[in-house]
Image (tube, rainbow, N blue to C red; front, side, top):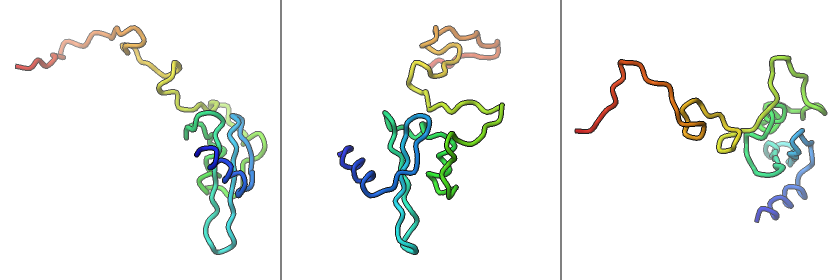
Length: 118
């Protein structure tokens, strides 16, 4: 089923570009006055919405008319490189005390009393 839907998108939509992660973007344009064009992304690997960089997100959601320039928009020095959602991976953030990072949490202050059922 997934292969058929990919073929339908590729056959009926126009290729608009590719991002630095290998995701490919397509657009199906309808006749004037029918309806707004449909924009698609075919993910490179697992389909995960957070893998769409900000440059392409605006185009994909019809916030921008034009596709991003080749190589993306210029970035400020304070901007980080786009990362997809890392939850559930070995790179996920785990605070001190998390069971997968040692499980030793800082002692609670003196005003904390654990609840015990009666």
